[in-house]
Length: 118
Image 1 (tube, rainbow, N blue to C red):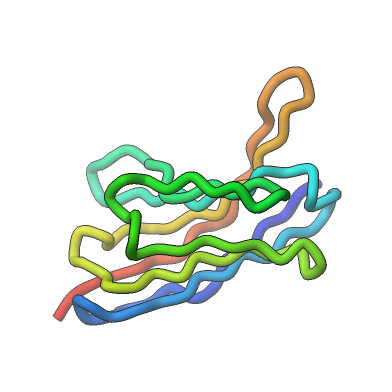
Image 2 (spheres, one colour):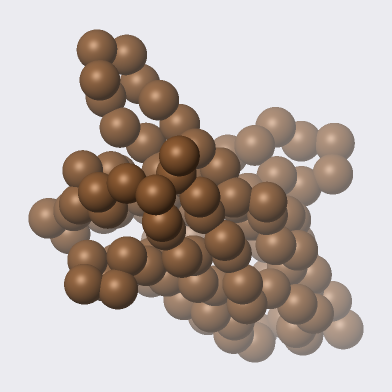
């Protein structure tokens, strides 16, 4: 069973930076597309970034140029470096692991709170 454990959230001032980490266990990491999603109060969960095992990355338009995702296939970990944070980035951030075995199967971490406020 895949397990995902996020860390690195917290409170930061506008313009600041945070780095989220997600540790993966329970399966073969390189088979999964790893993603970061976020959900703000009253809003639907949205994709922030998704990264394949080969390093191809897709970013939401709202974070392009500010956020960088990376993965370490040797450490079974994925990261989200968030710079120039804005109040509208405030949300619970979730790590996601997705694989297609006929149908798409998703696994989720417990989420980590990111609050951008002065």
